[in-house]
Image (cartoon, rainbow, N blue to C red; front, side, top):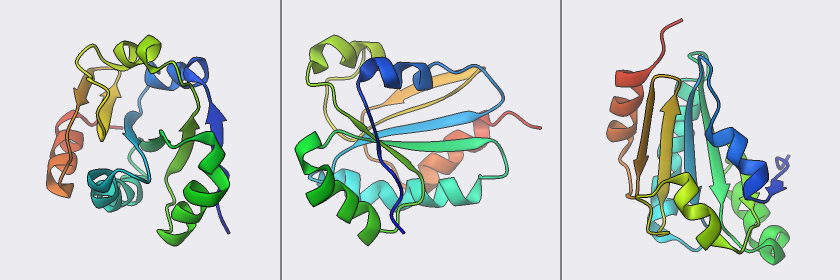
Length: 143
């Protein structure tokens, strides 16, 4: 069964980028046409599975076009058995929101925000699983 993809504009996404609680959030900006994004998706999946009981939440924010949600995005999610939450950011005025995600973001993909109430970092790069795991382990809020 395919998961539901929530379609949001930046106003709908912004609160998710600024939560202050015991959870560590891993918010990855990607697209089905981005080769480095696709290469690292299994690592985010693995993080989502491995840390699900440790207050770590992975959110995959797709920057695919809304018109491709049924022809590209949903089939991609199903084919790759993506279980992490997926949102489609449908806000074409990227110049108005890229700096709000991070002033360091050029707009290139992949890009990832990892944060919790004690820590926030932005990465405009591809990850290995080991790099992701290391950042999360160093900044995890212990129960």
